[in-house]
Length: 118
Image (tube, rainbow, N blue to C red; front, side, top):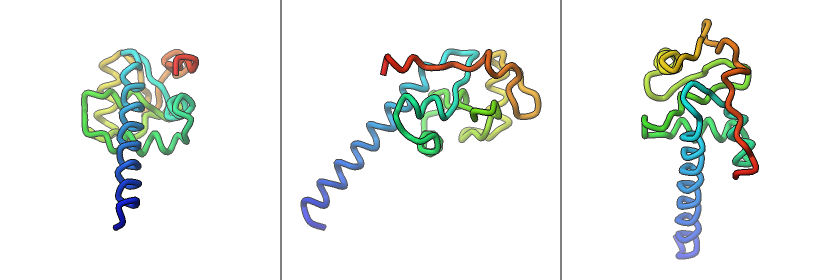
């Protein structure tokens, strides 16, 4: 590999890691007892919701509350650290009611970011 190609790869990797960290920092701002959606985070970041989901699937830190991120239809979706059952357990622990795999009173539990902050 040429030096320029190596530099480009290093820059791309550093940019990706920085971007991932920004997504994780946004997720930390979701208050206990609230959820947000992949789409809400995507709006803040200016990316596609699937990219948000991909980033969360790479998370290695269980202290980042990724379980508070759900689908825009109120369904809970998956969770890297224990699957859907664990995600539901964690959400219920925060007094979020779930019927089946869908959040009850979803609009009341939905946290929307103030996009002027970002």
